[in-house]
Length: 301
Ligand code: PMP
Image (cartoon, rainbow, N blue to C red; front, side, top):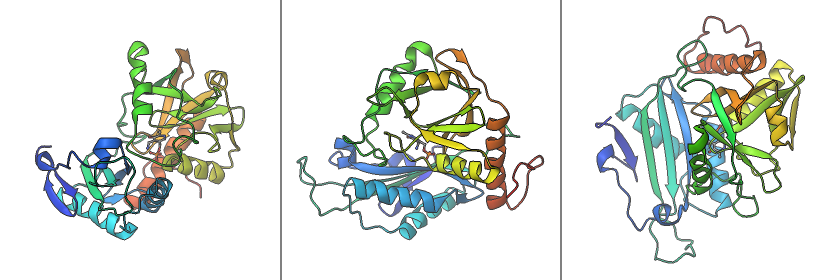
């Protein structure tokens, strides 16, 4: 890993020497937006969706960084090529840069733009998954920051909310924290979206609540449409999740990860979860490797 190179403000530099100023607002205040992406076969997955979300995040915090999506993609591609990476984890950060030391931001932005990348094997449903078994979930006391405080659709460097939620897991040793909104309804995981199966329907907290619009969440909803699975995007209680027939969590890194337990109660995956895993995997196979994996029959459309 030591000889990886990162992209910092337009230059590829050795990862160990990739630094930003201590006066950078990303460091001082978390005043920055970012995307976590995965590359499969040299290409990042769902770039357009990530670029759009980054733009929405930047708009939500009035960060006019002046870089278009083509330029950001070029820097990601350069980083992948410079490191000879095919299957990789990629993190793109855009901060409000260094400004005079006061909280109120200046509209004159000289952004700091960083691309980090590291190898991440593809894994998948028929191969060794990248995660260590199905997820154990624990409902935590830390509430998800309300949308009225920090816009939920903005993916910013300010991750203290999720960090505090994850710190609570030290007692249960669970993999992911289930965060509730201010009213006690299900919101999301510290770094993942929540799904569960109730009867015929796939349920997930709606984006009316404090929920990040996950790119994987969107993909899962698209797969549900394709497969004719009814979706209930609504407002749910922790009991709804604990009573679920199946549950899974999603994010770019985990993809579709089955849930084993919630608050110590056994849930387990099942046929619906497996279907979403298979179709997600089949889409990656088709779009990035130009083929079909054995057993990909689930992809019908
Ligand atoms: N919610 C939060 C708070 C997250 O940090 C993430 C990870 N980016 C997600 C949901 C899942 O989003 P995605 O599918 O785009 O990775």
